[in-house]
Amino acid sequence: KFSLNKMNEHGYMILLYDETKVFNLLRELNKLSNYDNMTGLHNRNFIEDKIKKYTTTENTGVISLDLNGLKANNDYLGHERGDYLLKQLSYKMKQVMHDNDGYEMPRIGGDEFLIVMKNTTLETLESIRTSLLELCYSDEIMEKISVSIGVAFEDSTQDNIYELIQKADVVLYDRL
Image (cartoon, rainbow, N blue to C red; front, side, top):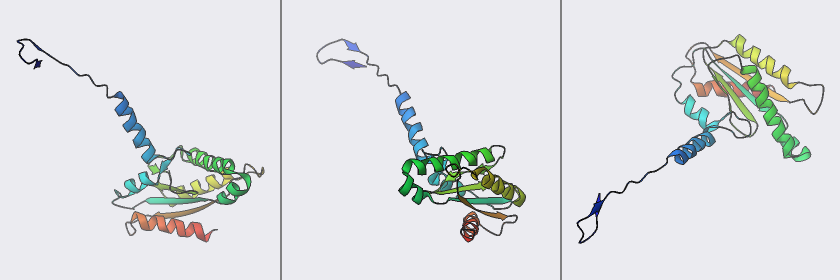
């Protein structure tokens, strides 16, 4: 309600504000902070927030993946080739994990990926590893994706999640 000086009249002002643009902007910011644009997978920021909440590693598995030769592909065949390989690996990871539940699957670095699974078994993790390697192999050299994969599993609560991730990385680099 307002009135003008030296007048007996008064009026009302109503301000309307459309929050749709603000809501859409917040949704876009959330997406940018939690997803990798190129692959559509979650990113490192997302997984770090998620694993801070892990209270136990019982029956938890970690699969660490590293795309081999990304720098060489970028340098000699162009960044389009490197981008293609990253997208293809993430697509194949999604294919393999499609029927599984209870996992997180981020791209955590330039050529590094992670799969963290709760309520799983070592046999399931090894099956995923084998399926990924089979999908990444091709007789056609331009379709072949060279990937190294490390697996770690904890059936008790001895390790925390960070130690389990580190174990998977050690296995990955031992296989290089």
